[in-house]
Length: 486
Ligand code: ADP
Image (cartoon, rainbow, N blue to C red; front, side, top):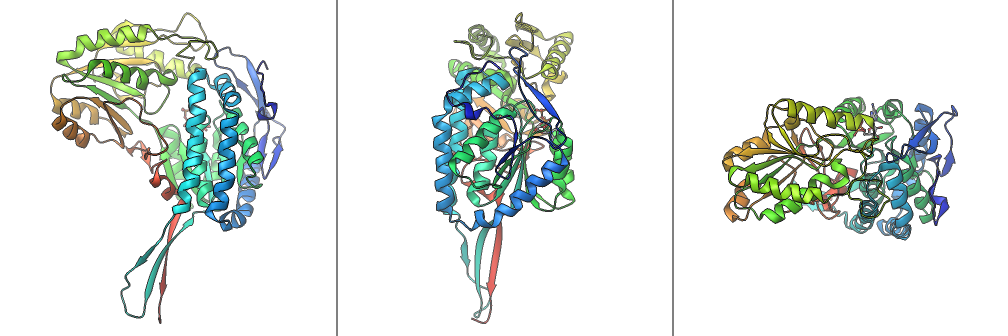
Protein backbone atom coordinates (compact mmCIF):
# COMPACT_ATOMS: atom_id res chain seq x y z
CA UNK A 1 0.00 0.00 0.00
CA UNK A 2 1.79 3.10 -1.23
CA UNK A 3 -0.95 5.66 -0.78
CA UNK A 4 -0.36 8.48 1.61
CA UNK A 5 -3.24 10.35 3.11
CA UNK A 6 -3.39 13.57 4.99
CA UNK A 7 -6.39 11.95 6.71
CA UNK A 8 -5.51 8.25 7.21
CA UNK A 9 -8.93 7.53 8.73
CA UNK A 10 -10.31 7.57 5.19
CA UNK A 11 -8.52 4.37 4.32
CA UNK A 12 -11.15 1.93 5.56
CA UNK A 13 -10.99 -1.73 4.69
CA UNK A 14 -13.95 -3.17 6.57
CA UNK A 15 -17.66 -3.12 5.86
CA UNK A 16 -19.84 -0.54 7.64
CA UNK A 17 -23.01 -1.90 9.22
CA UNK A 18 -25.10 -0.31 11.94
CA UNK A 19 -22.37 2.18 12.70
CA UNK A 20 -19.68 -0.48 13.13
CA UNK A 21 -16.72 -1.38 10.97
CA UNK A 22 -16.72 -5.11 10.55
CA UNK A 23 -15.22 -8.09 8.78
CA UNK A 24 -17.17 -10.82 6.99
CA UNK A 25 -18.54 -13.47 9.35
CA UNK A 26 -16.78 -16.03 7.17
CA UNK A 27 -13.49 -14.18 7.55
CA UNK A 28 -13.21 -14.09 3.75
CA UNK A 29 -11.73 -11.08 1.98
CA UNK A 30 -10.98 -10.07 -1.59
CA UNK A 31 -8.29 -7.91 -3.16
CA UNK A 32 -8.75 -4.40 -4.49
CA UNK A 33 -6.24 -3.71 -7.25
CA UNK A 34 -4.80 -0.59 -8.80
CA UNK A 35 -5.63 -0.98 -12.51
CA UNK A 36 -2.67 1.19 -13.52
CA UNK A 37 -0.08 -0.97 -11.81
CA UNK A 38 -1.79 -4.23 -10.87
CA UNK A 39 -0.67 -3.64 -7.28
CA UNK A 40 -2.91 -4.75 -4.45
CA UNK A 41 -4.30 -1.78 -2.54
CA UNK A 42 -6.22 -3.61 0.15
CA UNK A 43 -8.18 -6.68 1.15
CA UNK A 44 -11.81 -5.96 2.01
CA UNK A 45 -14.49 -8.25 3.47
CA UNK A 46 -16.26 -10.62 1.12
CA UNK A 47 -19.63 -10.44 2.81
CA UNK A 48 -22.71 -12.48 2.02
CA UNK A 49 -26.39 -12.94 2.82
CA UNK A 50 -25.85 -12.84 6.59
CA UNK A 51 -24.26 -9.38 6.54
CA UNK A 52 -26.80 -8.13 4.00
CA UNK A 53 -29.60 -9.25 6.36
CA UNK A 54 -27.84 -7.57 9.26
CA UNK A 55 -27.49 -4.31 7.31
CA UNK A 56 -31.14 -4.40 6.22
CA UNK A 57 -32.22 -4.98 9.83
CA UNK A 58 -30.06 -2.05 10.95
CA UNK A 59 -31.50 0.21 8.25
CA UNK A 60 -35.00 -0.90 9.19
CA UNK A 61 -34.41 -0.22 12.89
CA UNK A 62 -32.91 3.21 12.15
CA UNK A 63 -35.75 4.26 9.87
CA UNK A 64 -38.36 5.55 12.36
CA UNK A 65 -36.01 8.02 14.06
CA UNK A 66 -34.42 9.21 10.82
CA UNK A 67 -37.69 9.80 9.00
CA UNK A 68 -39.11 11.53 12.08
CA UNK A 69 -36.45 14.23 11.91
CA UNK A 70 -37.42 17.40 10.15
CA UNK A 71 -36.06 17.86 6.64
CA UNK A 72 -33.96 20.68 8.03
CA UNK A 73 -32.42 18.47 10.70
CA UNK A 74 -31.50 15.90 8.08
CA UNK A 75 -30.25 18.67 5.79
CA UNK A 76 -27.93 19.97 8.50
CA UNK A 77 -26.32 16.56 8.90
CA UNK A 78 -26.06 16.08 5.13
CA UNK A 79 -24.52 19.51 4.83
CA UNK A 80 -21.77 18.43 7.24
CA UNK A 81 -21.17 15.34 5.10
CA UNK A 82 -20.91 17.56 2.02
CA UNK A 83 -18.45 19.89 3.72
CA UNK A 84 -16.31 17.00 4.97
CA UNK A 85 -16.19 15.46 1.50
CA UNK A 86 -14.98 18.73 0.00
CA UNK A 87 -12.47 19.18 2.82
CA UNK A 88 -11.08 15.73 1.98
CA UNK A 89 -11.27 16.14 -1.78
CA UNK A 90 -7.62 15.39 -2.43
CA UNK A 91 -7.51 12.19 -0.36
CA UNK A 92 -10.75 10.95 -1.90
CA UNK A 93 -9.43 11.72 -5.38
CA UNK A 94 -6.15 9.91 -4.73
CA UNK A 95 -8.04 6.89 -3.46
CA UNK A 96 -10.34 6.93 -6.45
CA UNK A 97 -7.54 7.16 -8.99
CA UNK A 98 -5.73 4.35 -7.20
CA UNK A 99 -8.64 1.91 -7.34
CA UNK A 100 -10.39 3.10 -10.50
CA UNK A 101 -7.64 4.49 -12.72
CA UNK A 102 -9.11 7.78 -13.90
CA UNK A 103 -6.75 10.76 -14.10
CA UNK A 104 -6.48 12.72 -10.86
CA UNK A 105 -8.06 15.82 -12.40
CA UNK A 106 -11.15 13.78 -13.26
CA UNK A 107 -11.18 12.17 -9.82
CA UNK A 108 -11.05 15.56 -8.15
CA UNK A 109 -13.91 16.65 -10.39
CA UNK A 110 -15.95 13.59 -9.48
CA UNK A 111 -15.54 14.23 -5.75
CA UNK A 112 -17.05 17.70 -6.21
CA UNK A 113 -19.72 16.39 -8.59
CA UNK A 114 -20.62 13.67 -6.10
CA UNK A 115 -20.73 16.07 -3.17
CA UNK A 116 -22.98 18.41 -5.14
CA UNK A 117 -25.77 15.84 -5.02
CA UNK A 118 -25.64 15.91 -1.24
CA UNK A 119 -25.83 19.68 -1.10
CA UNK A 120 -28.61 19.76 -3.69
CA UNK A 121 -30.86 17.17 -2.09
CA UNK A 122 -30.31 18.46 1.44
CA UNK A 123 -31.80 21.72 0.19
CA UNK A 124 -34.41 20.16 -2.04
CA UNK A 125 -35.93 17.85 0.58
CA UNK A 126 -37.10 20.87 2.53
CA UNK A 127 -39.54 21.42 -0.31
CA UNK A 128 -41.26 18.05 -0.50
CA UNK A 129 -44.66 19.66 -0.73
CA UNK A 130 -47.99 17.91 -0.84
CA UNK A 131 -51.31 19.08 -2.27
CA UNK A 132 -54.78 19.96 -1.18
CA UNK A 133 -57.16 18.56 -3.77
CA UNK A 134 -60.67 19.94 -4.35
CA UNK A 135 -62.82 17.12 -2.97
CA UNK A 136 -65.55 15.09 -4.63
CA UNK A 137 -68.17 15.83 -1.95
CA UNK A 138 -69.13 18.77 0.27
CA UNK A 139 -68.35 16.89 3.49
CA UNK A 140 -64.94 15.66 2.37
CA UNK A 141 -61.43 17.05 2.23
CA UNK A 142 -58.51 15.58 0.35
CA UNK A 143 -54.88 16.07 1.24
CA UNK A 144 -51.90 14.51 -0.55
CA UNK A 145 -48.68 13.99 1.40
CA UNK A 146 -45.35 12.52 0.35
CA UNK A 147 -43.52 10.09 2.61
CA UNK A 148 -40.11 8.42 2.45
CA UNK A 149 -40.46 5.04 0.80
CA UNK A 150 -38.49 3.20 3.52
CA UNK A 151 -35.31 1.15 3.41
CA UNK A 152 -33.43 1.62 0.12
CA UNK A 153 -30.88 -0.72 -1.45
CA UNK A 154 -28.29 0.88 -3.72
CA UNK A 155 -26.12 -1.24 -6.00
CA UNK A 156 -23.47 0.85 -7.68
CA UNK A 157 -20.85 0.55 -10.45
CA UNK A 158 -17.10 1.13 -10.52
CA UNK A 159 -16.91 3.86 -13.16
CA UNK A 160 -17.95 6.65 -10.76
CA UNK A 161 -17.04 5.11 -7.38
CA UNK A 162 -18.09 8.20 -5.42
CA UNK A 163 -20.79 10.02 -7.39
CA UNK A 164 -22.96 6.99 -8.15
CA UNK A 165 -23.27 6.46 -4.40
CA UNK A 166 -24.05 10.06 -3.51
CA UNK A 167 -26.45 10.43 -6.45
CA UNK A 168 -28.57 7.64 -4.96
CA UNK A 169 -27.99 8.05 -1.25
CA UNK A 170 -28.30 11.84 -1.01
CA UNK A 171 -31.93 11.94 -2.22
CA UNK A 172 -32.76 8.79 -0.24
CA UNK A 173 -31.32 10.15 3.01
CA UNK A 174 -32.67 13.64 2.46
CA UNK A 175 -36.15 12.22 1.89
CA UNK A 176 -35.96 10.31 5.19
CA UNK A 177 -35.05 6.85 3.91
CA UNK A 178 -32.25 4.67 5.25
CA UNK A 179 -29.84 2.92 2.91
CA UNK A 180 -27.82 -0.23 2.35
CA UNK A 181 -25.15 0.21 -0.33
CA UNK A 182 -23.43 -2.59 -2.17
CA UNK A 183 -20.53 -0.91 -3.98
CA UNK A 184 -18.81 -2.40 -7.00
CA UNK A 185 -16.16 -4.97 -6.16
CA UNK A 186 -13.51 -3.05 -8.14
CA UNK A 187 -13.95 0.18 -6.15
CA UNK A 188 -15.14 -0.42 -2.57
CA UNK A 189 -12.54 1.87 -0.96
CA UNK A 190 -14.16 5.08 -2.18
CA UNK A 191 -17.48 3.86 -0.79
CA UNK A 192 -15.96 3.06 2.59
CA UNK A 193 -14.24 6.45 2.74
CA UNK A 194 -17.64 8.06 2.17
CA UNK A 195 -19.01 6.02 5.06
CA UNK A 196 -16.21 7.22 7.31
CA UNK A 197 -17.11 10.81 6.49
CA UNK A 198 -20.82 10.07 6.92
CA UNK A 199 -20.04 8.86 10.41
CA UNK A 200 -17.95 11.95 11.15
CA UNK A 201 -20.83 14.09 9.87
CA UNK A 202 -23.16 12.54 12.42
CA UNK A 203 -25.32 10.36 10.21
CA UNK A 204 -26.78 8.05 12.88
CA UNK A 205 -25.89 4.39 13.05
CA UNK A 206 -27.92 2.14 10.77
CA UNK A 207 -28.96 5.00 8.47
CA UNK A 208 -26.15 4.43 5.97
CA UNK A 209 -24.62 0.96 5.63
CA UNK A 210 -22.05 -0.53 3.28
CA UNK A 211 -21.83 -4.23 2.50
CA UNK A 212 -18.78 -5.20 0.45
CA UNK A 213 -18.53 -8.41 -1.54
CA UNK A 214 -16.64 -9.82 -4.47
CA UNK A 215 -19.60 -11.28 -6.36
CA UNK A 216 -22.87 -9.40 -6.18
CA UNK A 217 -25.33 -12.27 -6.52
CA UNK A 218 -25.70 -13.33 -2.90
CA UNK A 219 -25.95 -9.88 -1.36
CA UNK A 220 -28.04 -8.76 -4.34
CA UNK A 221 -30.41 -11.65 -3.78
CA UNK A 222 -30.93 -10.61 -0.18
CA UNK A 223 -31.37 -6.92 -1.00
CA UNK A 224 -33.90 -7.61 -3.75
CA UNK A 225 -35.69 -10.41 -1.91
CA UNK A 226 -36.14 -8.81 1.50
CA UNK A 227 -39.63 -7.46 2.19
CA UNK A 228 -38.03 -4.84 4.46
CA UNK A 229 -36.32 -3.19 1.49
CA UNK A 230 -38.88 -1.06 -0.34
CA UNK A 231 -36.78 0.31 -3.14
CA UNK A 232 -33.82 -0.67 -5.28
CA UNK A 233 -31.70 1.90 -7.02
CA UNK A 234 -29.22 0.31 -9.42
CA UNK A 235 -26.64 1.61 -11.86
CA UNK A 236 -24.83 -0.93 -13.98
CA UNK A 237 -25.21 -3.23 -16.93
CA UNK A 238 -28.56 -3.81 -18.61
CA UNK A 239 -28.21 -7.54 -18.10
CA UNK A 240 -27.79 -7.28 -14.32
CA UNK A 241 -30.45 -4.55 -14.17
CA UNK A 242 -33.00 -6.83 -15.80
CA UNK A 243 -32.10 -9.63 -13.42
CA UNK A 244 -32.48 -7.39 -10.37
CA UNK A 245 -35.77 -6.03 -11.67
CA UNK A 246 -37.07 -9.59 -11.97
CA UNK A 247 -35.85 -10.35 -8.45
CA UNK A 248 -37.64 -7.26 -7.14
CA UNK A 249 -40.93 -8.46 -8.61
CA UNK A 250 -41.40 -10.95 -5.77
CA UNK A 251 -41.84 -8.15 -3.24
CA UNK A 252 -43.10 -5.52 -5.74
CA UNK A 253 -40.32 -3.08 -4.97
CA UNK A 254 -40.07 0.26 -6.61
CA UNK A 255 -37.00 0.25 -8.85
CA UNK A 256 -34.76 2.90 -10.35
CA UNK A 257 -32.45 1.56 -13.01
CA UNK A 258 -29.70 3.40 -14.77
CA UNK A 259 -28.43 0.93 -17.32
CA UNK A 260 -26.40 0.81 -20.49
CA UNK A 261 -26.38 3.37 -23.23
CA UNK A 262 -25.41 3.51 -26.88
CA UNK A 263 -25.08 7.26 -27.27
CA UNK A 264 -25.14 8.71 -30.77
CA UNK A 265 -23.04 11.83 -31.30
CA UNK A 266 -24.26 13.47 -34.48
CA UNK A 267 -22.26 16.07 -36.39
CA UNK A 268 -24.30 17.85 -39.06
CA UNK A 269 -22.87 19.70 -42.06
CA UNK A 270 -23.69 23.04 -40.47
CA UNK A 271 -21.99 22.26 -37.13
CA UNK A 272 -19.23 24.34 -35.58
CA UNK A 273 -16.60 21.66 -36.18
CA UNK A 274 -14.19 22.88 -33.53
CA UNK A 275 -16.92 22.79 -30.92
CA UNK A 276 -17.97 19.34 -32.15
CA UNK A 277 -14.40 18.05 -31.84
CA UNK A 278 -14.09 19.48 -28.36
CA UNK A 279 -17.43 17.92 -27.36
CA UNK A 280 -16.48 14.56 -28.85
CA UNK A 281 -13.21 14.49 -26.93
CA UNK A 282 -14.99 15.25 -23.66
CA UNK A 283 -17.85 12.87 -24.28
CA UNK A 284 -15.82 10.02 -25.76
CA UNK A 285 -12.49 9.91 -23.98
CA UNK A 286 -13.41 11.03 -20.46
CA UNK A 287 -12.82 8.21 -17.97
CA UNK A 288 -11.16 6.31 -20.87
CA UNK A 289 -14.59 6.01 -22.48
CA UNK A 290 -16.03 4.18 -19.49
CA UNK A 291 -19.25 6.07 -18.83
CA UNK A 292 -22.77 5.14 -19.81
CA UNK A 293 -23.20 8.54 -21.52
CA UNK A 294 -19.96 8.35 -23.53
CA UNK A 295 -20.44 8.92 -27.25
CA UNK A 296 -20.66 5.37 -28.58
CA UNK A 297 -21.45 6.04 -32.24
CA UNK A 298 -20.19 9.20 -33.90
CA UNK A 299 -22.46 9.90 -36.86
CA UNK A 300 -21.01 12.46 -39.23
CA UNK A 301 -22.74 14.01 -42.23
CA UNK A 302 -21.12 13.30 -45.57
CA UNK A 303 -20.07 16.91 -46.29
CA UNK A 304 -17.93 17.26 -43.14
CA UNK A 305 -16.95 13.63 -42.56
CA UNK A 306 -13.34 13.91 -43.71
CA UNK A 307 -12.73 17.31 -42.15
CA UNK A 308 -14.20 16.20 -38.82
CA UNK A 309 -12.15 12.97 -38.84
CA UNK A 310 -8.96 14.93 -39.49
CA UNK A 311 -9.61 17.50 -36.76
CA UNK A 312 -10.66 14.82 -34.27
CA UNK A 313 -7.45 12.92 -34.99
CA UNK A 314 -5.40 16.04 -34.25
CA UNK A 315 -7.15 16.44 -30.90
CA UNK A 316 -6.88 12.77 -29.99
CA UNK A 317 -3.14 12.79 -30.69
CA UNK A 318 -2.81 15.28 -27.85
CA UNK A 319 -4.24 12.85 -25.29
CA UNK A 320 -1.70 11.43 -22.88
CA UNK A 321 -2.09 7.86 -21.69
CA UNK A 322 -0.63 6.76 -18.37
CA UNK A 323 -1.09 6.22 -14.67
CA UNK A 324 -3.72 8.75 -13.57
CA UNK A 325 -1.53 10.09 -10.76
CA UNK A 326 1.10 11.33 -13.21
CA UNK A 327 1.00 14.96 -14.25
CA UNK A 328 -0.60 15.67 -17.61
CA UNK A 329 -2.17 12.23 -18.03
CA UNK A 330 -5.61 12.50 -19.65
CA UNK A 331 -6.41 8.81 -20.13
CA UNK A 332 -5.87 6.09 -17.56
CA UNK A 333 -6.14 2.31 -17.88
CA UNK A 334 -9.38 0.40 -18.39
CA UNK A 335 -10.80 -1.09 -15.25
CA UNK A 336 -9.83 -4.71 -15.82
CA UNK A 337 -8.90 -7.41 -18.30
CA UNK A 338 -12.53 -8.17 -19.24
CA UNK A 339 -13.02 -4.53 -20.19
CA UNK A 340 -10.00 -4.38 -22.46
CA UNK A 341 -10.80 -7.75 -24.02
CA UNK A 342 -14.23 -6.44 -25.01
CA UNK A 343 -12.80 -3.29 -26.57
CA UNK A 344 -10.25 -5.36 -28.46
CA UNK A 345 -12.96 -7.69 -29.77
CA UNK A 346 -15.17 -4.82 -30.99
CA UNK A 347 -12.28 -3.07 -32.74
CA UNK A 348 -10.90 -6.16 -34.42
CA UNK A 349 -14.32 -7.24 -35.64
CA UNK A 350 -14.95 -3.76 -37.10
CA UNK A 351 -11.55 -3.74 -38.80
CA UNK A 352 -12.12 -7.24 -40.19
CA UNK A 353 -15.36 -5.95 -41.72
CA UNK A 354 -13.68 -2.98 -43.37
CA UNK A 355 -13.31 -0.20 -40.77
CA UNK A 356 -10.03 1.69 -40.88
CA UNK A 357 -8.06 2.62 -37.74
CA UNK A 358 -7.08 6.26 -38.31
CA UNK A 359 -5.41 6.27 -34.91
CA UNK A 360 -4.69 3.59 -32.34
CA UNK A 361 -6.64 0.36 -32.54
CA UNK A 362 -4.75 -1.83 -30.12
CA UNK A 363 -3.47 -2.28 -26.59
CA UNK A 364 -1.10 0.47 -25.50
CA UNK A 365 2.63 -0.12 -25.22
CA UNK A 366 2.32 0.60 -21.49
CA UNK A 367 0.79 -2.87 -21.17
CA UNK A 368 -1.71 -3.90 -18.50
CA UNK A 369 -5.15 -2.62 -19.35
CA UNK A 370 -4.04 0.52 -21.18
CA UNK A 371 -5.62 0.92 -24.63
CA UNK A 372 -4.61 3.37 -27.35
CA UNK A 373 -6.96 6.29 -27.95
CA UNK A 374 -8.56 5.08 -31.15
CA UNK A 375 -10.47 6.48 -34.11
CA UNK A 376 -12.09 4.19 -36.67
CA UNK A 377 -13.44 5.50 -39.96
CA UNK A 378 -15.63 3.73 -42.48
CA UNK A 379 -17.64 2.08 -39.72
CA UNK A 380 -21.05 0.68 -40.67
CA UNK A 381 -24.18 -0.46 -38.88
CA UNK A 382 -23.55 -4.16 -39.53
CA UNK A 383 -20.57 -4.10 -37.16
CA UNK A 384 -21.11 -4.99 -33.47
CA UNK A 385 -19.61 -1.67 -32.45
CA UNK A 386 -22.81 -0.03 -33.75
CA UNK A 387 -25.01 -1.92 -31.31
CA UNK A 388 -22.79 -2.72 -28.32
CA UNK A 389 -21.62 -0.32 -25.64
CA UNK A 390 -17.84 0.01 -26.16
CA UNK A 391 -16.87 1.35 -22.71
CA UNK A 392 -13.41 2.19 -24.01
CA UNK A 393 -11.46 4.97 -25.77
CA UNK A 394 -12.62 4.12 -29.28
CA UNK A 395 -14.46 6.57 -31.55
CA UNK A 396 -16.17 4.84 -34.49
CA UNK A 397 -17.17 7.30 -37.23
CA UNK A 398 -20.29 6.43 -39.25
CA UNK A 399 -21.31 8.37 -42.35
CA UNK A 400 -24.84 9.64 -43.06
CA UNK A 401 -26.40 11.85 -45.71
CA UNK A 402 -29.71 13.28 -44.50
CA UNK A 403 -31.17 14.51 -41.23
CA UNK A 404 -33.84 11.80 -41.36
CA UNK A 405 -31.20 9.13 -41.84
CA UNK A 406 -29.24 10.45 -38.83
CA UNK A 407 -32.30 10.30 -36.59
CA UNK A 408 -33.17 6.84 -37.83
CA UNK A 409 -29.62 5.57 -37.19
CA UNK A 410 -29.50 7.25 -33.79
CA UNK A 411 -32.74 5.60 -32.68
CA UNK A 412 -31.84 2.19 -34.11
CA UNK A 413 -31.00 0.69 -30.71
CA UNK A 414 -32.89 -0.67 -27.71
CA UNK A 415 -31.07 1.91 -25.57
CA UNK A 416 -32.05 5.51 -24.92
CA UNK A 417 -29.84 7.23 -22.35
CA UNK A 418 -27.83 10.16 -23.78
CA UNK A 419 -27.60 11.54 -27.31
CA UNK A 420 -25.62 14.50 -28.63
CA UNK A 421 -25.76 16.55 -31.78
CA UNK A 422 -24.06 19.57 -33.25
CA UNK A 423 -25.93 21.97 -35.51
CA UNK A 424 -26.37 25.73 -35.75
CA UNK A 425 -29.71 25.64 -37.53
CA UNK A 426 -32.47 26.44 -35.06
CA UNK A 427 -35.15 24.51 -36.96
CA UNK A 428 -32.93 21.45 -37.10
CA UNK A 429 -32.09 21.80 -33.43
CA UNK A 430 -35.78 21.48 -32.54
CA UNK A 431 -36.56 18.73 -35.06
CA UNK A 432 -33.64 16.54 -34.06
CA UNK A 433 -34.06 17.15 -30.31
CA UNK A 434 -37.67 16.04 -30.60
CA UNK A 435 -36.88 13.12 -32.89
CA UNK A 436 -34.28 11.50 -30.62
CA UNK A 437 -35.66 8.73 -28.38
CA UNK A 438 -33.36 9.53 -25.47
CA UNK A 439 -33.69 10.71 -21.88
CA UNK A 440 -30.86 13.24 -22.23
CA UNK A 441 -29.89 15.28 -25.29
CA UNK A 442 -26.74 17.38 -25.45
CA UNK A 443 -27.11 20.06 -28.12
CA UNK A 444 -23.79 21.61 -29.08
CA UNK A 445 -22.62 20.25 -25.72
CA UNK A 446 -20.67 17.11 -24.83
CA UNK A 447 -20.92 17.16 -21.03
CA UNK A 448 -24.43 16.81 -19.66
CA UNK A 449 -24.08 15.53 -16.09
CA UNK A 450 -24.99 17.90 -13.27
CA UNK A 451 -26.91 17.58 -10.04
CA UNK A 452 -29.42 20.21 -11.13
CA UNK A 453 -30.77 18.29 -14.15
CA UNK A 454 -32.65 14.97 -14.39
CA UNK A 455 -30.35 12.16 -15.47
CA UNK A 456 -31.85 8.95 -16.81
CA UNK A 457 -32.83 6.95 -19.82
CA UNK A 458 -35.75 5.60 -21.80
CA UNK A 459 -36.27 2.21 -23.45
CA UNK A 460 -33.82 -0.39 -22.07
CA UNK A 461 -31.55 2.28 -20.60
CA UNK A 462 -33.61 2.42 -17.48
CA UNK A 463 -36.34 3.71 -15.24
CA UNK A 464 -36.38 6.83 -13.10
CA UNK A 465 -34.35 10.01 -12.93
CA UNK A 466 -31.45 10.99 -10.70
CA UNK A 467 -30.55 14.54 -9.68
CA UNK A 468 -32.74 17.64 -10.02
CA UNK A 469 -36.11 18.27 -8.38
CA UNK A 470 -37.36 15.04 -10.01
CA UNK A 471 -34.70 12.92 -8.31
CA UNK A 472 -36.52 12.92 -4.99
CA UNK A 473 -39.67 11.37 -6.44
CA UNK A 474 -38.02 7.97 -6.74
CA UNK A 475 -37.60 7.86 -2.95
CA UNK A 476 -41.05 9.10 -2.02
CA UNK A 477 -44.46 7.51 -1.87
CA UNK A 478 -47.66 9.47 -2.33
CA UNK A 479 -50.27 9.05 0.36
CA UNK A 480 -53.68 10.61 0.05
CA UNK A 481 -55.85 11.37 3.04
CA UNK A 482 -59.57 11.46 2.49
CA UNK A 483 -61.41 13.08 5.39
CA UNK A 484 -65.15 12.56 5.53
CA UNK A 485 -67.86 13.92 7.78
CA UNK A 486 -66.48 17.44 7.75
P1 ADP B 1 -20.22 -3.84 -15.09
O1 ADP B 1 -20.28 -4.86 -16.18
O2 ADP B 1 -20.09 -2.47 -15.58
O3 ADP B 1 -19.29 -4.20 -13.98
P2 ADP B 1 -22.40 -4.81 -13.55
O4 ADP B 1 -23.84 -4.64 -13.86
O5 ADP B 1 -21.85 -6.19 -13.60
O6 ADP B 1 -21.66 -3.80 -14.50
O7 ADP B 1 -22.05 -4.22 -12.13
C1 ADP B 1 -22.73 -3.15 -11.53
C2 ADP B 1 -22.98 -3.50 -10.08
O8 ADP B 1 -23.85 -4.62 -10.03
C3 ADP B 1 -21.74 -3.89 -9.30
O9 ADP B 1 -21.85 -3.41 -7.98
C4 ADP B 1 -21.81 -5.40 -9.32
O10 ADP B 1 -21.14 -6.01 -8.23
C5 ADP B 1 -23.29 -5.61 -9.18
N1 ADP B 1 -23.76 -6.94 -9.59
C6 ADP B 1 -23.32 -7.70 -10.61
N2 ADP B 1 -24.03 -8.84 -10.66
C7 ADP B 1 -24.95 -8.80 -9.65
C8 ADP B 1 -25.99 -9.67 -9.17
N3 ADP B 1 -26.22 -10.83 -9.75
N4 ADP B 1 -26.71 -9.26 -8.12
C9 ADP B 1 -26.48 -8.07 -7.52
N5 ADP B 1 -25.53 -7.22 -7.93
C10 ADP B 1 -24.77 -7.57 -8.98
